Image (cartoon, rainbow, N blue to C red; front, side, top):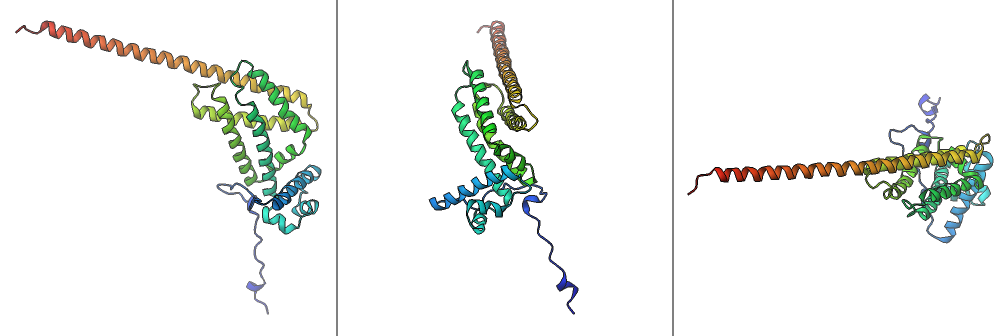
Length: 266
């Protein structure tokens, strides 16, 4: 008779992407292609993934279907990606790189006198990316599915925010760096959230984009005003300190002169 121990099934291993971890790990491909042939397969898998995600949503998304659509063996897919969560994180990284490239073209426009006009054009361009490529919203929604995908998305947003913070420096030169970093992270989160909100089925895209522009312009104008106010406060503080040093110097001189006058002559 088979023992109870031998007949007991091993516990099913939970996918690490689904586990609630104290510090969720960033999800990245097992390897990236280095040769042209592998790169074509890698790109084909991502293109098929984006297409499938848009058609069926993340719940019905499977690695087997991705491999079939890309005409790539499933084993090849698993050489690059451990699971579908890693695939969607790579799609999100792809989208981020595209937006960073667009933002780099906007760099240097702040704080020129026309920065509001350039900001308006940049938001319009980003909004166009979301309307012409519905997969962007599907990728963003899929990134909210597990602790690890959310953690990976947060890492991507922070990388984007670092670029935004550098661009904000000329507009807010007297704002402390930690505050500027937080401002950039807030802006990135608002932009991503509002653009995905703008392409919901029951939402008027143009109206949402107008509101996004109003939020960004108001936020940046206040940030610029705060930076100028901080510069003025610093200047007044330095003037007071300089005045105090000058007054102390005069008092020392007067004291020395008084001591010399009262000293008995030789």
